[in-house]
Image (cartoon, rainbow, N blue to C red; front, side):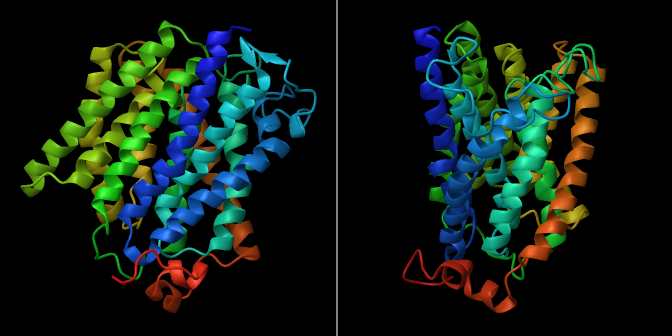
Amino acid sequence: MIGADTAWILVATALVLFMTLPGLALFYGGLVRSRNVLSVFMQCFAIACLMSILWLAAGYSIAFGNNNAYWGGLGKAFLNGVDADTVSGSIPEVLFFAFQMTFAIITPALIVGAYVERISFGFVLIFSSLWMLFCYAPVAHWIWGGGLLAGADWSLFENGVNDFAGGIVVHQTAGIAALILAAFLGPRSDKSKPPHNPGMVMIGAAMLWVGWFGFNGGSQLAADGGAAMALTVTHLSAAAASLTWALWERIRYGKASLVGIVTGTIAGLASITPASGSVSPVEALIIGGVAGILCQELCHVVKNTLGIDDSLDVFAVHGVGGMFGILMLVVFGHAGLLEQGGGLVVVGLFTAVMTTVIILVTKVIAPVRVSDEDENVGLDLSSHGERAYDMTS
């Protein structure tokens, strides 16, 4: 067990949790109307708490147990057989558990952006719980836990899928789930008002940017040159995507907005995530530069062509960004098309089917949407009995 590796992953774990609380909460909270900002905070905070407990109870074991190609079983439920002296590679296994727990927190939290301002809180908790256990955790096992897509003896592909920090495991799964859930929900009754606090959006995006160094750099699971390179290319991709998003926005609309440039940041971060363990700085600039335009265009496709109110563009930014990064590994020669494309297809189909099943099961237990009256009043007051500001908008 190497002390430097342990120290770095301790820091990286804190950084990834920082991405959800408060980073993602502020980013999403600023994008909604003022009457719904607390509901977004509540959804992100409650998901973080609930996923932590479920990850201990079963999620970690399903993802990183050694049962078979499809799931890890329940042999490590409640960290059975794991103590402070158990190691995973060069770090304590309990630290590996905690690091991966922060990924299990942020992945269902990303989906929040698709259903803000109109979903019932009970549905959020039940759906997120079932989705993390039965969709996210199995996919994590397939790619990161030695399962179906990892290149082991029982793998579908000889070399396995190259997904360093979650282009498929995190971003594709969350993006597809977001798109399907938004389609089930239907559009908001009023989509006309702009983000209520662009400054809050920028602060949240900046926190996500900093936290992403732990997300990608920590996925090396060591304090070495690979972690340093992952951190560096992550930053460069984010910077490039921010600028190309802003430039493309100015070309299309005549002005570059603050919300636009920071959304480009997130697109660049999502796109570099699967590739951050393989690509060079120049390749990272290309990935980010293309992502800033590609993801912006997909926002219009989802809303205008498909007519789906994915409110905060989760699929276009995270889903498309993550899948794009996976394929760019093929373009740059760091992975094979069969493995990368096959991984996208297998996980995409599984996520679509499992998400649909979970929605149908959950809606039997809890209402999907709030009433029209509650939506008009705002979820802050109707669902949680509080207001963020002494005003309405």
